[in-house]
Length: 299
Image: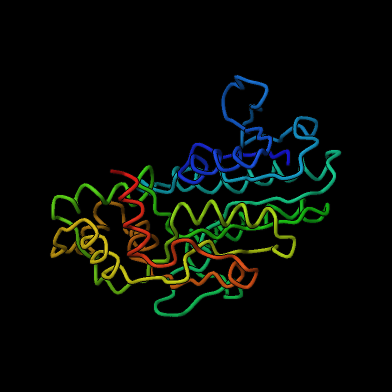
C-alpha cells in the first residue's frame, strides 16, 4: 500500500513506522515544518491542505495531535482540541476533494470519549461521556465525515493507555517505581484500560487489512485493571514495594483539578469488543506478561 501518515513522532508512530516498512508499504509522512525528503509533505494542521498534495494513497493513518499532558490552561485546551479537530477536518476535506480512489482512513481518537464511568463496562456501543476530553473526542471523530461521505472506510482508534518504555505514561512511572516510591493514585479503585505498544501496532495493521472494521474500535487489552492492581503488578515486575499512595488532592495540585479528574483519577473499564469479534488475537492480553515483556526488552 501507499500510505499517508501523520503523528509519527509520538509513542505509537515511532513503533508503527518500522512495522509498516517491514511489510513493504510505501510511507509518506505529513510533517509540520519543512519537508526534507520526497517522502515528506509539509503541512500546518491549522490550515486547509491542498488536495493535490495527497493524491494517490491507498490508506491514511492520521494520529497527529497536541500532547494532553501539562496543566490545562485555556490556551492548552484550545491547542489540544484544534490540533485534533481542525487537523483532521483539513485532512479529510482534502481527501474528499482530491482524485483519490477511496481507501481506508485510520484516525486517532481515545477512550476519553467515554468520560468517567466508574465500574461500568464499556464497549464501542457505549454512550458518549461528559467532560472536555469526551467532547474533544466527539468532535475529533465527527471531523472525519467529509472522507466517510466520499467513500473512505473510516476507523476511529479509541486508544487507551499505551504501555511503552520508550515514551508515554509507563516511561514516566518507571523511575519512581524503581526507587520504591510507586503506588496507587487516589483511591486506586479507578479502572485503567491499557494496551501494550506491540499489540497497538499489530491492531493498527489488522485494521488496515480487515475490510469489515469501520467506525470506533477500542484499542485496549481485554483485561483492564484498577489503578491499585496496576501499581502492584508494576512493582512486582520491578521487584519493588508499592506502599506509597499519591493522594487525589496532590494530583489536582500538580496537574490542575480538571486534568487530574479527566486523566489519572478517571475510571474507564473498556473492552476491545470489535477487535475480538474481527478475529484479532492479542499477543499480550494480561498486564503481568505485558510488563515483563516490555521490561525485558529494555534491559
